[in-house]
Length: 214
Image (cartoon, rainbow, N blue to C red; front, side):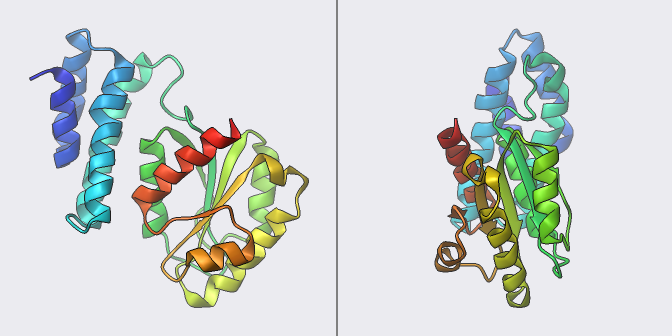
């Protein structure tokens, strides 16, 4: 079995403790670092994401696989010319004001990082102005993600998106929303660019949006 194949299987199975050594072994065999990243780890996470979407695995398994990938990326980082972090662009992420939920957000961030985004995590209970301020400090950001996990914080999500929609930089970014009570209909109504129902879809959609922005 090739070194890349082994990395792929270890990430897919969430063998976090063994991945670093397998990545090192693949590098020692002369495997291309970008191929180890794309074919060994990102492809494996795509499979994990699809299994999660289909209900074959659940959040704990997905977190374990993401952790395995993270361990592998640590070994790879020095060997990747551009660095894996940020290859897909910058993504600002936060849970809106009044909402203290972060498990879903953290899962999304792990998937986004797995897909090559550099994520600026604003945490929970984020005032709408903070999204704008953070963009102004990081004008190379491509996507801003706002999440709400409670029906009572849906208005705060709407206000955050409305404020972003009024900014001069609006044409340079895409706005993504998500969270348990959020629907595509609500996302359309408040003027967001995209809604996804789970972390795996979010990473996939973010890659597409990032490519659209060029």
